[in-house]
Every structure is written in structure tokens, then in C-alpha cells.
Image (cartoon, rainbow, N blue to C red; front, side, top):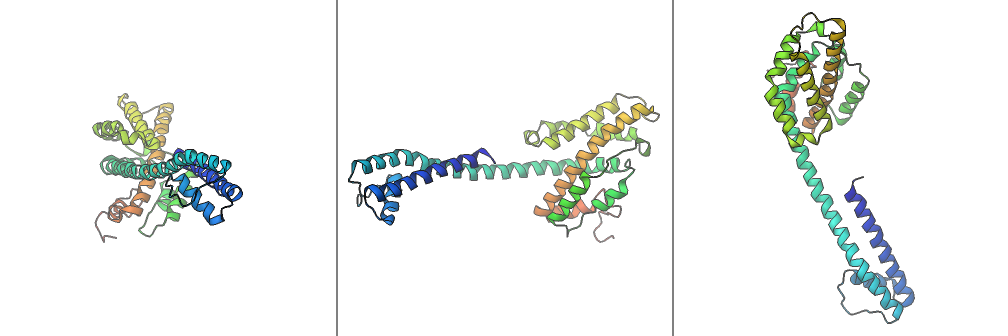
Length: 274
């Protein structure tokens, strides 16, 4: 629970306690009816003061002073907390939209291409084909099931199945985009995406610092494959999250994303080609 909601609950609890104290106190000490006690307590806490009712006893007057001094601040606190919740919710929604715009740019310019290259190295890609063949009919439950299935998947890469020099060249060609992404303050708020970019940079540096990539000794090959698995796993989860976002908000973008789905062997960008 965020601090705004906690603060609102505290103010509401104090406001309710003061209101209850006033109602019971005015009924007991001033012999007000229940309705009059509620009415007078509220107008007192709101500092309206119509003057049609007023306490006669010293205890009643003291109670009214307590409700005025405590009630005004508490009431304003409730209003301010509710306002903050709505404003922060709006700002969070805008940040979320901006983040997904950046994520979409990443997958359009680089992410999908990197996924295609890494899937060629996956010895268990057939299982991912079954899990991630997304359709327009997918519901939230389908995305949740896919996410759960991915958590139980053993991610692996075999560098001997692909072309590491070509992967190195691809990552090097995307260096400018990666730098722009990691400099974007919106990205800093998304820890998983930041970890993904950091892992991609690391793999790029590992590959660039090797002159020979076609005949790696086993320990070095396993080291690089571990770096690729790190990227592969983060990338797939981020891709699935983004696809879920498109499914909820942008059907026309989802249409293209499904037609270039790297986990669908039958995917074809040409509409009606299947």
C-alpha cells in the first residue's frame, strides 16, 4: 500500500473518531437528538457555524473547540490525500504509457531482431512455440498462464547453433539506440528493463573483446552462453508483458506484433498469408 493511501486511512480514522466523539458528546452533555448531534458535529468540523444550534454547557463548548481545531485539519487532510491519490494515479498512468512507448520502440528497432537471433540458439524452442503463440483471442488468464509456464521453463542457449560474429555485429550496430534508451529517465523507473539493457551491453562488450568467436574453448563458450541466457530470459518476459499491454490497449499494434512473433514459426507479416 502506498503512502498516500496510508495517510488517507489515518486521516479518515481521526476524522471518524472526532465525529463519533462529537455526536456522543453532544447527545450526552447537550441533550441533542441523534440527528441534531450529527448535524452540529459536521457543521462544527467544517467551521460553517449557522448558529441555529450551539452548546450551552462548558463541557459542550470545550468539545466544540476540540472539534473545530482538530476537525478542520483532519478534514483538509482527507481532501488533500484524496487529491494526491488521483493526481499520482494520473501521473503513474502517464509514466506507464511513456514506458510502453519506449518499450515498443525497443522491440521495433532491436528487441524482435535480437529475440529471433537468440531463439535460433535455443535447443528447447519448440516448447516456447507452444507457450507463446499468441492469438487475438488471448485473455488476461491466457497471458498469466504463459507467464507461469515461462517461470517453469529451463532457458538455455547453444552458441554452436548460431552465428556469434553476426550477433556481435548486430549488437554493435544497435549501440546508439542502446545508449539513448539507457539515458532515458523513464527507463530508470523500470528495473527489469534496465537490467535487460545492462545485460545486452555486457554481452556486446564480451563479444567485442574477442577476436575469435568461431572456435571457442568450452569454458569460454559456456560463459558467453550464460550471458545470452540472462538476456534471453529477461527479453522474453519483457516481450510477453508488452504483448499483454498491446492486447489491452492497442489492437492494431498487437496485430503486427503477432504477425512478426518470433515464437510463431508460421508468423508472416503479410495479412491473410496463413
